[in-house]
Picture (tube, rainbow, N blue to C red):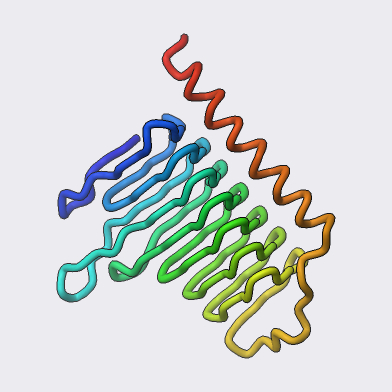
Length: 186
């Protein structure tokens, strides 16, 4: 469901994107070409800063926001999801936040108040709170990263994780096309 926020902003969705009818996309949200928004995802750009300003939530081309993902922001801060990025089931991306291109964020992961560099892989059940993740870094499942985390102990993305991430992204881009093709059939 696409809807206005209280200020009156309405989402813009590229004609080649697919938004599942059970998803809620509210306010100043920009969804790029060939994006897949899965069932029960919630993407809300509706909180204003103290001056009444609101930055957009932007989702880049060929990215996928899977089932039950929540993307939101505090006090009108920007959230940017790059191109060819996968945000897996039930994850939370909460702004202020930027997620680069070719990133994989695994199931139930929480990303808040940070920047995630291009080609990073954050596996399942991780928490990233207030600490940027450099490009091509790899967080194994259940990793917690805070401001105090020593990033020198993090590894770069192994080839198997890179291949898995690319496979997920390609699968979901094809889902966007397939669902658009059948969306008006009953």
